[in-house]
Amino acid sequence: MHTTLSRLFAFITGIVILTVLNPVAGIDILLVASAITVTAHVFLQEKLLFVFLIARPIFDYWRNYHILSFQNVDINLNASLSMLFALWVAYMVIRHRKEMRNIPGMFWGAATLCAMIVSATYSISPFTTLVESMKFFATLGFFVISFVSIKKKKFTLHHLGYATLIMAIIPLGAGLLQSIGSSGITTFDISSRVFGSFAHPNIFAFFLLFLSIIFINYSAIQPLNFFKEQAHKKYRYLGYVVLVTLIIQTYTRAAWIGLLAFLLIIGVLHFRKLFVSVLVTVIGFYAIFYPINTAIRSTTDYDLQDIQVISRITSRNEDADSLQWRKDLFLETMPIIRNNPFFGYGYGTFPQVWEKSRNITHLFDDSAEAHNDYLRLSLEIGFLGLGVYLIFLLSLLYQAIHTYWYRETHDKEMLFLIAWIAVFMLMSFSDNMLHHTPVMWLMWSWWGALFANKWNKRKGVGFIE
Image (cartoon, rainbow, N blue to C red; front, top):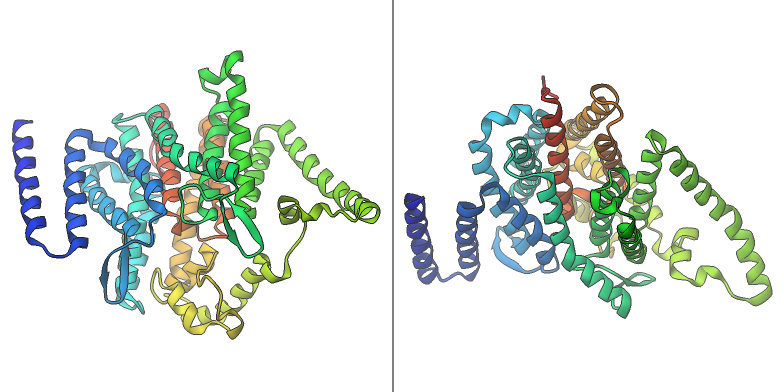
């Protein structure tokens, strides 16, 4: 330990000297951040993952703060954090390289990453592709490090749960303040959308969705001892109220659908009463809403659809119809994909390609993103790259299903994971899920931990056997 501390002191001294001599502020920030990371690693080791996990939502709001620029590409604060984490992951992968073969789907995850990196050789913006590939590597790193750490008992699911709880404090607190003060942002015709500490309500919505999935599991599916006590059950319902209320106030329909899909999936697989209750509630709502609203409107001139939440789930605004916009985007993107169907134009380049090729009707759109991961990957790394990515996700889903049905007797931990993976795959049709870094870091950490926790219980072999 004495030798390690001596080397650490020498390293920090060197960083201080470089910071003083270097005139570029952005590089100074990266040097200081590197020094902090190395110091934290010395004392925390694998638990440094928690620091990155907790810090990421705090910095998301400042994602437009640029640290460096290279070849007309700006590297923002969040990209810098991802790259810093990626370097740490690279070190940890080398350190735990013997465990790589045991990680479910790792071959296909690595193949997806390779497809992204190789696309830099023909990308229309090679530097963008490399930066985005490094961010995906960092995201994949959470899966890898979490799996290895749980498997080797460097930390436990309880530790990850505490880290998630701490991670959620600032976003939830900010979201509640925005909800109470009606201080959210306005997009198109929707006002006061809560966004927590994130740069956009959609990111906060998916963050809340995944928190809800975790909370439902450990409060109801596999309740912790805390929630089993009668006196503490009120905290379960309080958690549901807070999370659902905030999800509703993001006005992100995809997150609402995701939560509904999660409940239906676990209902079909295990909780039949829940499935019937959710299905009857949804069908019943739409069956009675329109006749009741018509009657109210004809007698009082009051329209229930004037309420933003009701309007969001019962009507479509022609001027801001996200469904029609996504349909138009898909139809206009397919000819671009057909020009280079197998390899694409380079990972992370969808905005640049789309801006050059989009229809004049979308010339002034506020976003040039795909809002569909599968569409985006088809354009960026071609159908070959998309196919590898889909195999990666399906291999994880297969492993979870296989464990649930065959290796364990309807294990509820795998039920939770099956539903989560399926919801993510569904959400990927409607948004840029891979772009939502703080949400991805949370999700992949839990997926890796859950697979490893099951590994420790059954002492079996990995998916790539």
